[in-house]
Image (cartoon, rainbow, N blue to C red):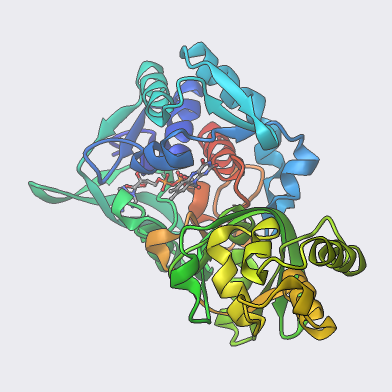
Length: 413
Ligand SMILES: Cc1cc2nc3c(=O)[nH]c(=O)nc-3n(C[C@H](O)[C@H](O)[C@H](O)COP(=O)(O)OP(=O)(O)OC[C@H]3O[C@@H](n4cnc5c(N)ncnc54)[C@H](O)[C@@H]3O)c2cc1C
């Protein structure tokens, strides 16, 4: 005896879309959410502004997704960026397009996106059970039969032959995403690849980080070196913290740094502080400045080249005497400046944990999921959507679109 047609576990980005599409397919839907309200994580996305999706076409979208973007092709075909934007528009949420193809609500408030999706799900007929945790999936004869739930009154079972697991990853566990879905999947026989923090700040080796903390460098190029080989390079902005580095270029490269660190490989970051000039041009520019300001102290001249906060650290690392006059600088000292500006490098010795990771890499193996329906290939009636799956993406609205698209496709099926 079923309590409803479909049970959705988790009222985050993927769960809300799964609820809307299942309802629109004529299903009687119950969404079980452990928190007292829906989508706590969605509320803090994009620094509270919610970067809903991206204007990239499918091909460019795919190039921002790991490790198997092609798995998502049917999900994107069934529900893509234009569809979530149309849904928000219908619910009265105006959006604006910003740098990098990023869409945000025009109000600048993530809560408007949450309210619109919850209202759309309710209008479509979804029923919500808040402050209720799913503690297990009931499987009988190779098919799902329901879920075990726990609320303040105790434990009981809720029966249905279709369950969509939308429990998210492990990052920012205070929002409710504590990785429960991985355990459910494993108990149902699914493989779960190692889950690691991704889009996460990196910890550097060096005694200078506290002095650089808070300094943001724009228009730099950063390269990630793994076991002495250049693995990735990104151009843009990074920020020093008291433990290491963060900011867009670091978050983008963190996925590979974290995996390499967990494989005990040597990870190094090299920052090119002057990417617009090659070594020869940079050397000529510095030589010109030294010649034109022979009586200036080196530390004063550095203001032309570097942000103030960086100067004492740079001078110490290059083993220079900041009190020296520009005219007294030797060729060797000048070359040390050029080489440190082109290769401000340090070892990466760790990463921050899930409390600071924007997403989780790894998860339920997509090899065991039917990409056309999001249904498990192992257990009939069991579906997975969102971050619980082993797919993750760069920043730019791609992660939410993955959640929306996989949620929608699962709900439709
Ligand atoms: C700080 C931050 C900023 C971000 N900004 C962006 C951004 O701007 N753009 C972007 O594209 N992505 C962003 N992301 C990533 C994005 O938020 C996630 O990829 C997305 O929310 C994943 O959706 P989901 O539905 O899979 O999981 P979640 O949104 O995590 O939802 C999972 C839900 O399931 C519930 N749940 C878990 N276990 C149980 C259980 N046992 N029983 C009942 N309920 C349960 C949780 O309480 C939660 O509500 C950001 C992430 C963070 C942490």
